[in-house]
Amino acid sequence: MAQPVRWSDEALEDLSSIAKFIAKDSPFYAEHVLEEILSKGEAIIHFPESGRVVPEMGNKSIRERFVYSYRLIYQIEDEIVNILAIIHGKRLLENDARFKKI
Image (cartoon, rainbow, N blue to C red; front, side):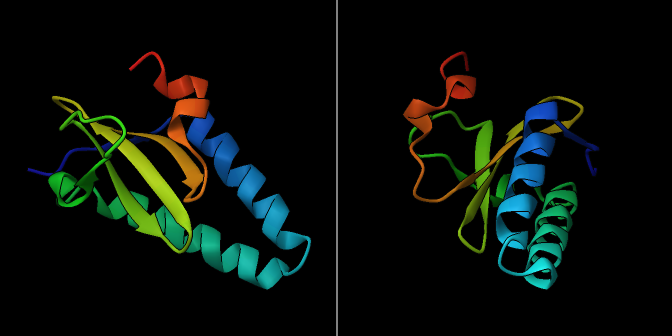
């Protein structure tokens, strides 16, 4: 059964930051990247366990899908999939305070 997807405030802030950064060079490409991220995020509802377990976390409920050079990180819970963050692939999770409490 498909689980609904909830985008955290932090993930939405990440999307906004990504769009602003890319739009400096190409508003067209910024829109395309955001559409792809949103599409992949919503597609998670069908197969939430299809993403790989985030290696730094080692928790089977925290997974990721890659969209271009970004990591879409989400957590599978009983009734919902929470999109936690969208970070650049070169960024280290241990430097992100959001993941210290999980």
